[in-house]
Image (cartoon, rainbow, N blue to C red):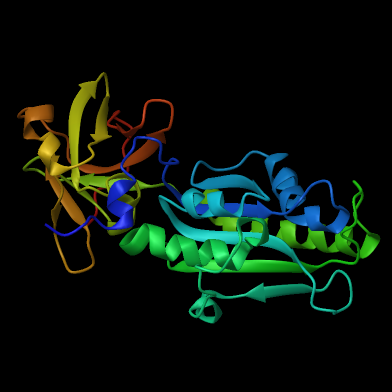
Length: 277
């Protein structure tokens, strides 16, 4: 029997909640401009965020950043840089530029940076590693011990925070996730929703008033309902006849992730959306 892959050893029940976007700020709050990453996270924390967006203060624990990527479809990292450019210069590094990352064996934990974290994450998470990654780097002027940013870096911090709000937060404020129920009691969901909440492809369901609750299961060995693939795009369908009985409603219904209970809530109240053609 071959040894399990690293990502197969992570099923410990402590994975971060799944999300569309995780924004991670790296840096040392006690070293002036090096704190720009965590400070961006604090700016975003000051306003209400959609549940699809998760914020992480990565601090200086670079190895933990790799674990924080679990369950995210997109990853954004913010960190300080020291390239000799003008202080406050912002570099945006797209995912295509991150294909060749530094090797890990010779990296000391005290020198672990964002690029090392991505390299570790690619090894650790394997097929579950998010491929949509963007890195924002802000050129620092002063990383000596101290609590204040230099003016140019503070200005850049606010600019980066606004870019993140516009590109990675606000699109999810306008999104209403939906599923479709057909006349034969099949529930259909798109691939994105299925990957986000039901990565194992199995769930269990129950009725609670006008809601249907779908609870993700860890693996098919746990039993439950199988989300079968409907098409090459990865859209899924699951039969809910045992949950809905013979009077299953038909139409398109809004869904909401209940983070406290770890389940997907489907609203079947009479005020439903028009059925898809």
